[in-house]
Length: 450
Ligand SMILES: Cc1cc2nc3c(=O)[nH]c(=O)nc-3n(C[C@H](O)[C@H](O)[C@H](O)COP(=O)(O)OP(=O)(O)OC[C@H]3O[C@@H](n4cnc5c(N)ncnc54)[C@H](O)[C@@H]3O)c2cc1C
Image (cartoon, rainbow, N blue to C red; front, side, top):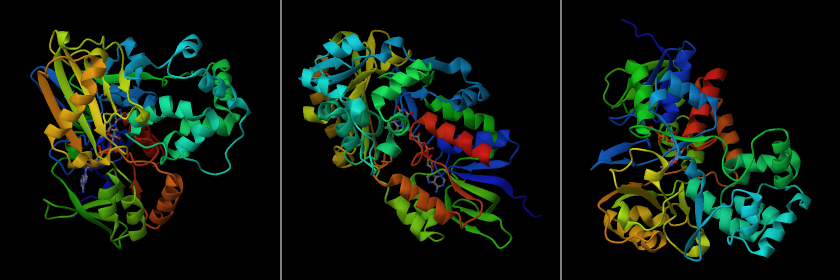
C-alpha cells in the first residue's frame, strides 16, 4: 500500500507548531504535528502541587492579536479564559531598595522618584532628535532618544522582563519593533504616540491588549488545541532526519518509526538549535545561522507563602529589577494577585526569575542555590518573614532566543538559503516575536500565505 503524503508535516508541538497545524487544518490541509516529548506544549507547562498552580514557563500572554482570540474560541476555551486583575496594570520597579510603581499618567510621571528632574527634562528633547542611520542596539537607541536614566530605570528592566535579555546586545529593530516603528514612521517616539492617540489608536506606557491566562494554567491552551487536532498530533515522535526525494516529497525519519513519514511540505517549529541539527546535512550555512542564536538560561522559581508572611500588598503585576540595583533576581510576578486559583485560601504565590543574559551562569546552579539566591533577594524587597510553605524551581537551560544586533539580516539570509529547498519552512519563536501571542499570530499569517 502506498502511503498518502501529508500536505504539511509540522515538526515540534510547542505553541508555534500546534497553532500552525490548527490554522492550516482550518484551510483544508492535511497536517501532522510531530512532537519529541511525551506531552505537547514545549515551554508552556503548568503543574498543580499542594494547591498551588505553578507555571514553569509563561505565566500569561498579551491578547493583542485576533489570531489568538480565534484559536481560543476554536479550541473551546472561552470559558477557561482568565483576564488579569485590573490591578495588574501596576508594575513596580526596584529603586533604592523600594518598589516604585511605573508611572501610568503624566501626573504620576512628574511625581515619580524613578527619574530625576534632569532625567525628565532630557525626555523633552526627544521630539527634536533625528532618525538613526545605522542599526542600533536597544540601549543605544534609548540612550540617544530618551537618555541614560530612562534606559536604566525603565527600558533595562522591561527588556529583562520580556527577553531576560541585555539591551546592549538586542537589536531595537528586531526585539522592539513597535518602538522602532515610531521613530521610523513619525521621527519621534513621543510625537508618534501623541499622533496615534489623536487618531484613536491606543498608546501608553503599558502594553496594549488584555493580559490573559487560563484556568488550569497556560498548558490548558496547548492541551486543548492538541485535543481538537486529535490524531493529527503525535507525541514521542522525535524527527531525526529529513530529506527531499526525487518525487518532490519530503521524507521525515522519526526515531520510533520503521517507515518514513511523507509530506509535500515541512514546517520546522523547533528551538533554533534543534532546527539546526535537522538542517545541517541540507543547508549547513542555514544551520550555522541558527546555532548562532543565543539562548540564555533562566530559572523560574515559584514560591508559596501564607498571606501573613508577606508584608507587601502584592497589588499589581509584579516588580522588575534594573541592572543598576546590583540585585541578581530579575524580578517577580505576583501570580496569585493576577489570576484566581493560583494559591490556596490565605496564601500567595510569587514567581521569581533568575539568570537571563545578565547572569548566564544560572544553568550551572543547583535548585537549592537558585532558591537561596532568590529568597535572599526578594525577602527584604517584599517584607517576607519565615520560609516558603511551597517551592518549585524550573531551570530552562536554553530559555529565550535573543534577537541580537544583525538578527533581521541573518533571518533574511536564512530565508534565502532555505528558498533552495521547496516546501521547507520555519515558524518558531526565534523570529518575528517571542510571546505566545506572537507565535500564534505568526502561525496564522503563515497559514494564510501557505
Ligand atoms: C521561563 C519563560 C517564561 C516566559 N514567559 C512568557 C510570558 O510570560 N508570556 C509570553 O507570551 N511568552 C513567554 N515566554 C515565551 C514563550 O513561552 C515562548 O516563546 C513560546 O512558548 C515558544 O513556543 P515555540 O513553539 O516556538 O517553541 P517551544 O515551546 O520551544 O516548542 C518547540 C517544541 O519542539 C519540540 N522538539 C524539539 N526537537 C524536536 C524534534 N527533533 N522532533 C520533534 N519535536 C521536537 C520540543 O520538545 C518542543 O515541544 C516565556 C518563555 C520562558 C522560557
